[in-house]
Length: 298
Image (cartoon, rainbow, N blue to C red; front, top):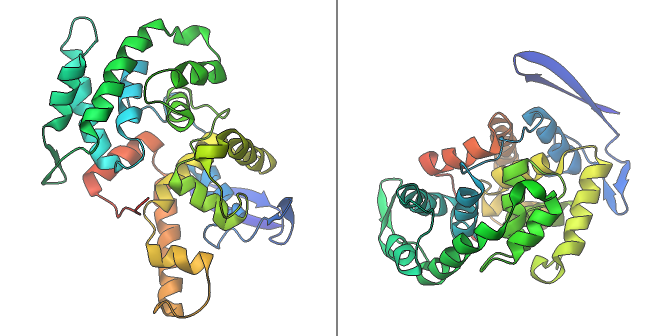
């Protein structure tokens, strides 16, 4: 047995985990909790973050705003830029009487440069996502959110323009702190590949349901909430340097990365994870806009 002791909400608490060499699931051992990126590491970080409430992950004030945030923060868009674009769109929606924006209105708002961390940037895919956004805003009128289960809501969202299972899962997780779905973006997939939970060539674009099932099984076996594990993985992985990730994937020498530097960055990684565990995912995402952490290219 290995014991994790942490100060949570001003009080010391302990979490007992199986020995590092014990199997968590076929092909995956627990590993040591003080070794970054092991299953025990992620489970302990999720535990330190506390239990998620229905509002822990929300980035918008309504389903419509959550769709805007997640649709504009999709693949190829840094979180900071997506949130800045979403705030502009959401403000425009609040100024309307019917909560609808036309394709042209969405495009004008997205094409206009954004101020992000003191510099001017342009939103990529502005024309394409303006089309998706306008269509989704119309389609949302047909979705009775309160009448749907988590998976039914995801299925309904997947029928909207430009929304696939990853984006739909992100919306559902954010709205409901749901543990029935997983947001398999590049950071989560990478973390699961390093642990051996996902195969090296895991491709969510082709096998989303299968990989999601594996991720949810991993969390279930670890007695950890999938929504929290997903959020802690995302917050931590997106801040890790590429050299350190390479060291975990291929420990062979020759990267020009000394053992001392590896150890120091490993400590830094854990420090960032602990800090991430003190934030709700929504606060962490907004903090990313203010602080501007390093991004790992997808």
